Structure formats: structure tokens, C-alpha cells
Image 1: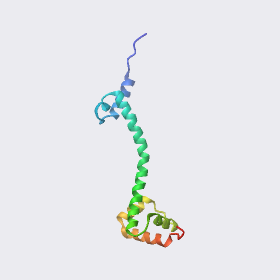
Image 2 (image 1 turned 135 degrees about the vertical axis):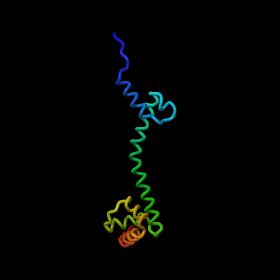
Image 3 (image 1 turned 30 degrees about the vertical axis):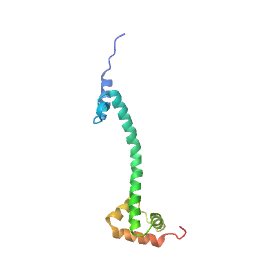
Image 4 (image 1 turned 135 degrees about the horizontal axis):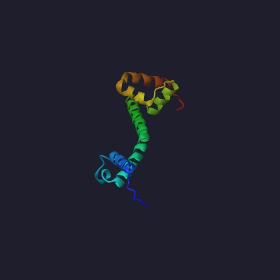
Length: 121
């Protein structure tokens, strides 16, 4: 039976993995086996953190809106309830941008929310 050497497909696969691992520290960027493990783990982290990023940004926007509401003597939950009752359809990202970039417009939103929050809350 003839000897079969690893051909171009194996070389291509190994080069692809090592290229993906370039910039990693130590053997993780030099040796195929450890590089392969590092690349797989990095892919898992990247997949997970693409979802976590969305949560982090939403939390940041809520913190910004809450801080802006606190300066105006309104709680975040009452502010959001008032906007919902007033049928204001602005997402949290835009509300946080308004709070930072245009405080006068945010003051008007707070007044609108105050006029429309439910007493039962």
C-alpha cells in the first residue's frame, strides 16, 4: 500500500487556522493544535458576546435615561410609563441621545410624561 502524505488540503486547513490565530500570545499563534483550540474558543466568545453587546448597550441607555430623569426629579419607571401612556414611540437609544444632545427637548419629554403617567403606579 502506498504512503499517503498530508496534501494541500491539510496544509490549507492548518494555514487557515494559524492565520486566524495570528496575534495570539505564545504557542497559541505558533502551534497548530493549541492554535486550533484558541480559535474555536475565540469563536465561541465572539458568538456569545455579539448577543451580550446588545444587552450591555440597552443597560447603558437605561442608565443614561435614568440619570437624566433623576436630574429632573422623575424616576425612570414613571418617565417610561408616562411616555407609553402618551403614545410616544421613542426607543431607549434615541431617548438617551436626546438626553445627552438636547436637554431642552428632554425637558419637554419629561413634562409630557408627567402629564400622562398613571396615578395607579
